[in-house]
Length: 218
Length: 70
Image (cartoon, rainbow over all chains, first blue to last red; front, side, top):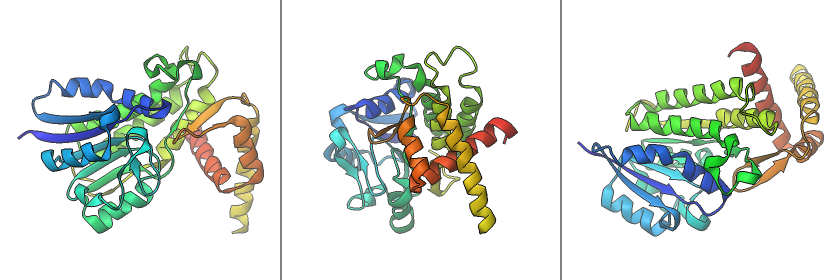
């Protein structure tokens, strides 16, 4: 049976451009995968209308939201709210992974506890990054972004491989810890940013979490 | 409670001392395009606000990872 995934990937400012870049490789692989049907709402298509239409049309098992967020919302292109309590019902019985700030804290709790969302993966705090400002327009050339990309890609790859939510979280946390231990010990720290990068990685490690059915898998 | 406060004060001193060794212009993005430089992080620690408590919590976790293999 073909599994369905809807993903939102705005890229209208530095942070959303980095998040967009972090899942690029996995998306490339997914396009060749006949067992997974991907609806990729990228750039200006990462808006509420397209998102809600895709949810109705595709009825996906997994929703992967990249963008800005706060305790009550996840946002899309130009920070339009694409998920909040007004439309949280569309995530019923589905797995949500929000690579966005803070949304697990309140929206995620509400989704699982009041709406029947199967699992909500997200961050209980902000999502942190250390950007090389000379590379902020070209995330793929920013070496500082690599350990953050690796952790985010680990989560996405693990979910795509059909591993449970708890395994996916565990693997991602292991990747964060590995980078915290090793980053800056070699030539990967040309600007002396390593202490801040290790701190930001630990920040993300601390606030990444999930609620709901942790044995669920995509 | 008193010993918890004392422990926190000691941890905060350690974290503050560590941040003071870093490039003051170095920046971290805390989502939503909000960036803080090391100087501003130090200000939070000196004010000991809610954000400072999170900074101490995270830096202590990082030190644990780096020193104990946990």
